[in-house]
Amino acid sequence: MAQGGNSTLTLIAPTGVANVTGADLIKEFKSGSHYVGTAKMGTKGDAGVVVDADTKVYGTDNLFVVDASFHPDLPTGNTQAIIMVAAEAAAARILALGGILANGTTPALPE
Image (cartoon, rainbow, N blue to C red; front, top):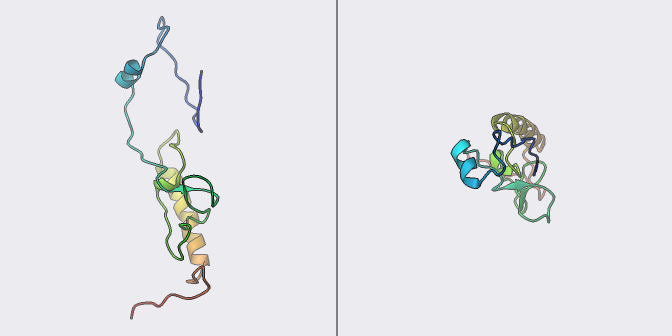
């Protein structure tokens, strides 16, 4: 039994099957088309990391990513619950900034 990432899934081969091939897997499993990991969250300097723990894009003053792209790997369940929780936390953090940019200035609002 092999596990990787945060997977809790176990492959159970049909009775009498000694070797499961890639073709067998493709025939049995379908994709959920849940795309993640294109704007990974993590510590600045880590490979492939785009956003910090507050969902703010590194190197920007006022750009945030709050969707499945910040999750580093595909969760074993539907991504909706993870994104809903993250969005609530991100909204609270963004509101806590009070409109102050990282450089300490307040952006000009359109009239």
